Image (cartoon, rainbow, N blue to C red):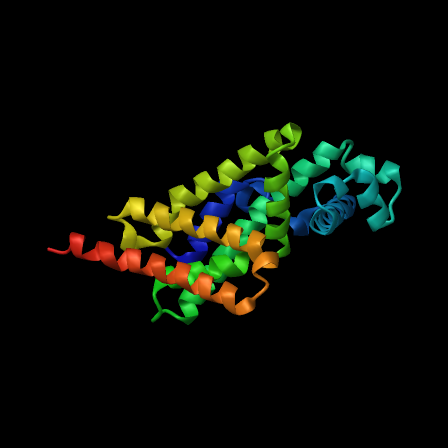
Length: 234
């Protein structure tokens, strides 16, 4: 399957209302609809900024309205409650987290096709966790551990992300088709270690230390892939 087709299928499966047939044709929208959509996007973007800069407690409709210099009434026209705003932020970061990773990974594969694919995937995943969207994702994940209202929104979205990626990644890594369990293990290991590295970054306080750990994780996953191949030969 071609890279673009795979990306489109995964993103549509994750958030059909934001991608593919579920998304509105922007060119045909009336101006007022487009204006409303742009304002909503602006509010969600400002909400992500508040989340990244001030943590989950700082994500409020009042703070977002002030950041965008809009009235409370205009804010409530788009998001009547804080949790409606939170739900929009969750959908945004879940969708864009996957879109960023897929675009980066397939671009790397196309440009550096002679390099091990597993290492390319690990590198692309590490770049994806340096983004603003992932920083927001991590803040939500941590806050959801103790906030039941947030957990009711965030956890289903996170599970949907995981389910879509797990069901589709065999298409992205056909060389592991016969070693499905190791493929899932590589994905889970990389996701867990990269999240842990971000949380430990202030403690490690050393770029060489982080790079050494990142390279070790990528090499470990590549060795896992290579060690599984002899079992399928012959």
